[in-house]
Length: 243
Image (cartoon, rainbow, N blue to C red; front, side, top):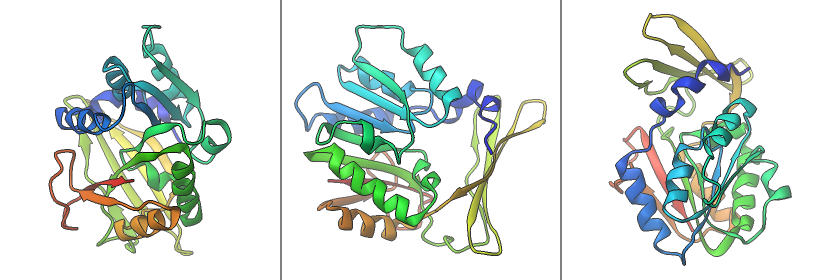
């Protein structure tokens, strides 16, 4: 169950767009003819999408939460920018979006684990391959689960801003299924639920790469951050480029 309204006010603070991320995408979009056609899966409030649109790119964001999508839509005030947002889940996108259209597809902030099932993750990667242009790139930003994937309890790094902290944990039930819980602590020390017992699948990086190869991606690059620092499997996060 989600209590998204508790986090919307702080969303941009907790999931900021860093200079390194901007530079990473500036280099990536430079590989394609302008305007680059970009799709963001689970785009949140659309902060980064507006950054990309202001750079002159053609941007589409899909989001499965209506409350968060409303925030993204309200941000779209400049009608001259080529940007649009749709209420749509990752499993639905292949039905409604143009095949072979996008130069870049991104799913960031560990959202890929919320697809929930191994087979659905495999299908998602296959769908991304179909939506991408022949020379397109898929960017996956996620936590690295290589060493604690089978743990009954995983505590992920805390996200925080000046005003709030976001705590995230994953626990396993008796059947082996894993569930995500998030809680927000505000400046007064009050704890507010954000997500309760949402089924997830925290796949290890090597499994993601295996599914990507199966989906037809030929080139796989792993970085520990948007600065393109090497990934050695000991870092808490990984940025995966698939093309």
